[in-house]
Length: 305
Image 1 (cartoon, one colour):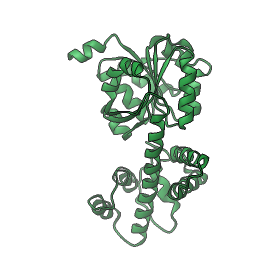
Image 2 (cartoon, rainbow, N blue to C red):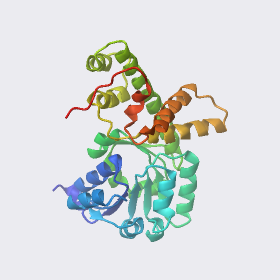
Image 3 (cartoon, helix red, strand yellow):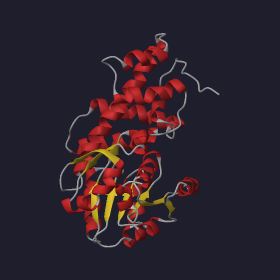
Image 4 (cartoon, rainbow, N blue to C red):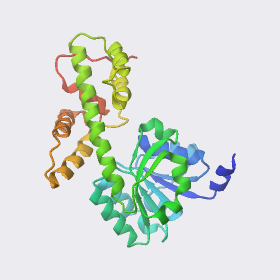
């Protein structure tokens, strides 16, 4: 155990939401030596994390009472509000001077409003959406797009050190982080949709999908999302690490924000319709790469075993 871990052993940090990203964050905090509390609606996931050395909390309020730093890694604004300010929410139980690191992808104005409400309770907030996927979360190498008061950052430097490879401080006002994450999600959603369309066309044209993936991955047409998501298609495995419904929500946030300033986003709108089509067909809970199933007349690789 190194000096860094010894220093963190008495530090209580809480994670609400043990999904693909949240579980990786919680495990990274454990590895760094923090006393890591966790809360999740799925009791089996919570029990498994407790077996790894974490501390299971029955409610967000129980977690908030024990922790000076609380990270929320839930799906959306509604869940963020519920776990912090709803019945048995964490905020009411947290001590003045504590800090919330809010990491769900939300509209910038929601982040601003949430920070103001928490401030009225004596709680600081850092608007800190994350990116990098489940693998980066698990290895403590996420990218974090953060905004908040300097005094709040000072209280959580060690936490960010345990979970992030890249921490971008985007200003003192919450909302700035969510604006940058919104643009990231615009690109991510469009790239996933484009990757699905490209692979569907390649399969329809008679190309071997595995060879097509290999060639494009080493060519100018590649993208991070192409390289990350197409292997799910090749494996025929649509287990949701990031679900179709996530991009229905996130691209919806992008389009709603653009509409307020009468700003056109034709590619985003098309990609959003592709994800909506998949969700309407009952695939909203599948991996976002399952958007390729929208395309007719092609035979996709099947899951082995």
